[in-house]
Length: 167
Length: 141
Image (cartoon, rainbow over all chains, first blue to last red; front, side):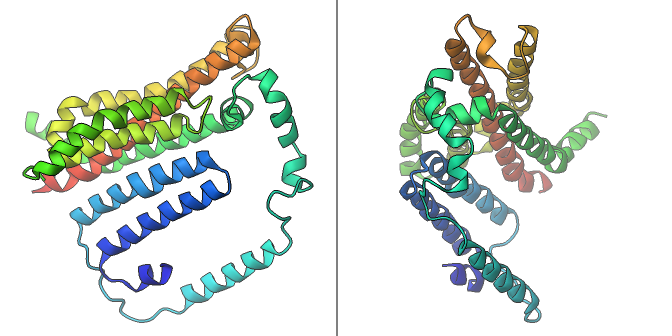
């Protein structure tokens, strides 16, 4: 699929393929029992992003210009990074290994005591909203900043034009 | 898109369910998968679907851009205000235990409020991005 995305010049098909890819990764997250992440991936990755990409295509064009010359450096960088990452996974503990460092640090406390301390059945919610409240506040601030950024970059012309009409 | 009868009918049927499902994800996030982030995106998707089918001007009548821009800030401020409320009630920032007599009830209230703030901001930002992307080409002509 990645090869098809790279090879295709017709950007509409590329957008559709990346949407399908997001949906498939949502399926993978469900397989890994990360339902909340899968939910987000399906809604944001497959839904909103695809719509925004289509909106961008409607503004520009949906045929990619053929590259002027073949560029090998990006391919080399991607292959080297991929090889390094795969080499890194060799040392990782197995999925669901109870002795993995990630499962020994704070996770047991969340699982055992969040029921009494927070009383919310979905531990993901209690970690996200209560134990990691600061992080989530930061995430919301990031989204807020993104929205303001879009407003400043794209919405600015509208205001200025309206102002001109009035004067 | 304005002449696609099937799309219009199906969208009209679907949008109420999308919005209700978003609210379900929002307020049931304590018990099942979901929460403010997902709910905000689904809620925005309902509006975006309406905008795609019936046109940008129609959806802007339902949700004026000014109101949406206020909501962007309101969600984040609600989140931050819950944190400040924790300080005012004599504890640390974003500590929900003191919001009610019972710490667990306080946690419930705090989580509900901040998730609502998250959902508001996310939905408003998504709708704003859609407005600005979709409305851009039209103004230049």
